[in-house]
Length: 235
Image (cartoon, rainbow, N blue to C red; front, side, top):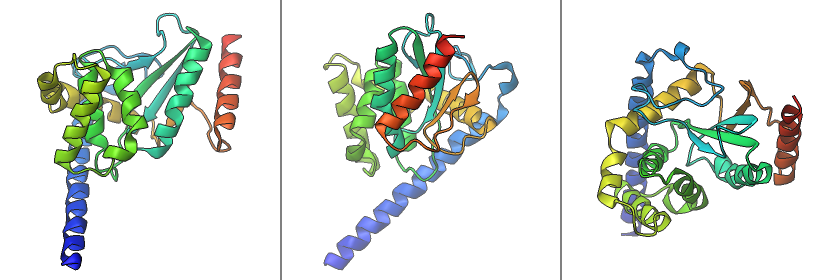
């Protein structure tokens, strides 16, 4: 009996991974027809037909910021979850001088990465992107290997929590599967592929990739980022 149960668990996990790969490939394929040459990847991108009229998501004040960093990340990526509170700390510390643009870059082997990105985009359509993104990262261990039904319930519960019960749950669930959200994720993926993202999280400043090779601790991360930010604030 125990052997049969273990086999069922393994089969369910394999199915989840397989479905995740299918969804990831469909999202990636949608980006192929877009003319990316008309977009400035290093700066804020407004909502257009290409991205489902969903503009870049930003931490900080994009209008006032003197330094803009672009982050490419996957909500199921452990390194992205680790970097997230550090980025929040820097944005708060530089209070108006720093803005961080977030773009989705999904890794094919993350079975729930696409669903998580869809949930974040759906929350964004009701004005709750930052809080929801923070919640996805901080609660990553609760949903990263959940089944399709389980993750939907978890994502809804998180949405209810970050909106203090005032969000439209039905709209949230509908938007998760909407064409607009799919376009936004595909658009971000297309940009990442054009600049040849090799892993997540990846950070760019003035269009140049930030070298994370020697960054292993929070102090290393903050020290390096502060040095780059301070240098560009003086320009």
